[in-house]
Length: 267
Image (cartoon, rainbow, N blue to C red; front, side):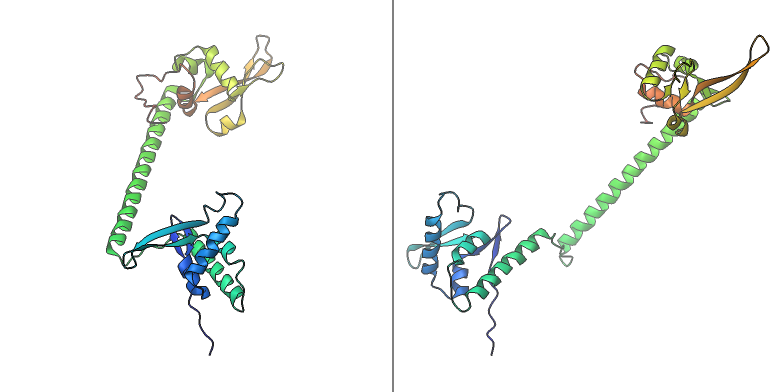
């Protein structure tokens, strides 16, 4: 009949997997004092005094019955490997492999998050409270976001009313609405990717991404000259949405105080 060997014994301390010298002695069929001698020899043979410190931890306890101190060693995988390196015999290799596999299994279980014990009412109640708390926080965030969207929409609508029937105004009028100098607004818009000029041309043009975002409009009109000829005039116009954005972004810009605007809420 094939003898079924017990599983090697390992344990966890401070998140590290250890084997104890007493368990190693039992598993390999050795006297514990001989295993202690072998551990002492391994530590003595390590060239650096501190090199083996993380691998072996001496455990000292007092045996009242024997009226003496008894000691053992907890050892990491590396310490265990050094200890059993010289162990030989028909089953030695199998024993070594089984112990190392036990280290592997325990370390793998530490890497995996432990599943909660739902049969424990305290654990179950804690999980329910955590889920309720997360749901309440998610609903609160959604409510805040909804209020910000509503405030932003109200701000844009108010600026749309200021912009007039065309829902837009020229940059000069936009500067007056924002209570800043037109040159300051032109300079800011050209310096922050809102408008640009073609080489050799005097007029300003709107960048396409600002048009697509609904911040600016590009108007083209035919204008009659005094001599009866016509020319094409291009101009950049700022929408209500663009005014709301500029009021928050341009230094010194101020929203009109008579429009019921709340730019802070629209951030």
